Image (cartoon, rainbow, N blue to C red; front, side, top):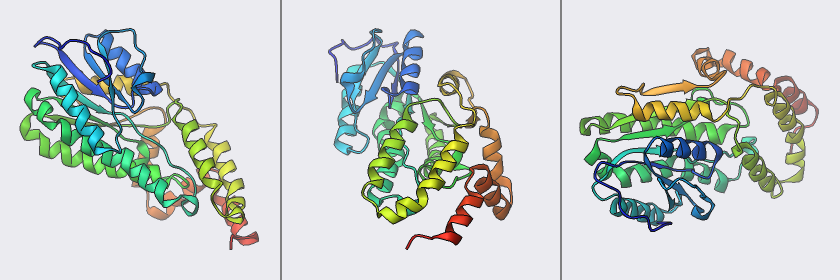
Length: 298
C-alpha cells in the first residue's frame, strides 16, 4: 500500500475505485472522500495519485497481473481491519479501436485482459470483504455493448462480455446480499480517447502500408463525424456510480449520457437496417463502398 495511514475505525465505510488516475476515476474518488468514505484509489502508477484528502489511500494495482490483484486485496483487507468494505468500482479500462483488419491480436488480448479479465479477477479477490459487509459491485460498461460500431469492434466486444459477466455476478452474488450494478455511459469527455488514438497509431506503424493507406481516409471520415457528436462531462458517470453505491435499491443496469439511450435503442432494429444506419451515421457507409470498388487492399 502506498502510504502508512493507520487502520480505520470499525464504523468506517470503504470503497475501492480502479482507474483512479483517469479523469472520471479521480473525480469519483474526490467526491466519495469528501462525503466521508475511505477510498482506496487503485492504479498501476500509485505515485501519480496525489490527493490532499487523507481519506484517500493509494493502492498499486495492475489488472493484467494476478499477483498484483491478490496483493492489493490482501493489503486492503489488512489495512481496513474491521471497517466496512461497501463497494468495489471497476472503473479502469482501455479502448482498442480501428478496423478489425488492422487490430493486432496482442492488442485484442490486452483489451479483454483489462476490460473483462481484470474486473473478474479483482471482484473474485474482493468477494470475501464484499460478503462480510454485504457490499456492492459497480461495473462501468459502455452503451456500445448494445450496439457495436464499425472500427470499434474490440471495445464493443469487451464491454458486451463485461455486461454478461455483470449479469452472472448479479445473480450469483444476490444470495449473499451483494448488489451488482452496471453503468453504461455514452460519449464522455475524457483523456481515454487520446490514449486510444496513440495506441492505434503505434500499432499502425507495424501494419502493411497499403492496407493502412486504404483505411486511413475511412478512419478520418469517421473521426470527423464522431467529433460532431455531443459528449458529457465525467459528472454523468460520477453521479450514476454514486447512486449505485448509496441508493437502497439502485437500478441493476443504467444507460447514462446524451444520446446513449438512442444508440442502445438501435439494437432493437432489424439487423440489416441497423447496419445501414450505423454505417451511414458514422460517415463511412458510402466512402467504404466506393473505396472497395476503386482500389481494395491486396
